[in-house]
Length: 246
Image (cartoon, rainbow, N blue to C red):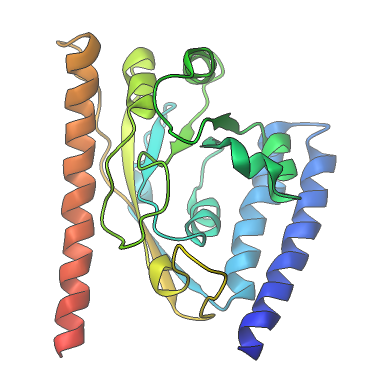
């Protein structure tokens, strides 16, 4: 328990320090916020909590603007994500995150986008803004299609907003599998176990089908992305079960 409190203190200090740096750097460039505040913050939080991070498949991130979609199991997914992404990006997050001191301020400074909790396609104006972010500003977007953390680690139903953006902007989708956070901190409560390891894996990109249009195009892309992520998540669960038996 003492180690957990010590880790929480160090992570809070890191959040304060890099949040402050981000606010200053944002006066010059939002991309610099990602490089000099957000990415170092993620690495500092993981180090503060004695978490080792392994990254695989970075070569699958295309050079052009894309949408990176990740599975969401734990609050520690975010520092793992920010520490591992080698490109400049903008996250799509819940409106509530912007209300968190320093984390919300840093998110605003970095130019991240926010949407309603349901993560669906109802916020038409914001979806158009994000689509222009890809097509006009050449931004890579990062999105959790489940819309919230999974209490069991299994994939939840996907929200369609991110797939609508991909379809409209014709951007490739890179499935991203984050693993290990659920064993460090579960969805409910504040208790977490410092130490352990997490992994991030980028899967090959999937592109919207140009031969289709409208709902069919969106649904096919969603199905392909979900199938790819589901196969990898279930593979990880089988590996864990096999290790437990040994």
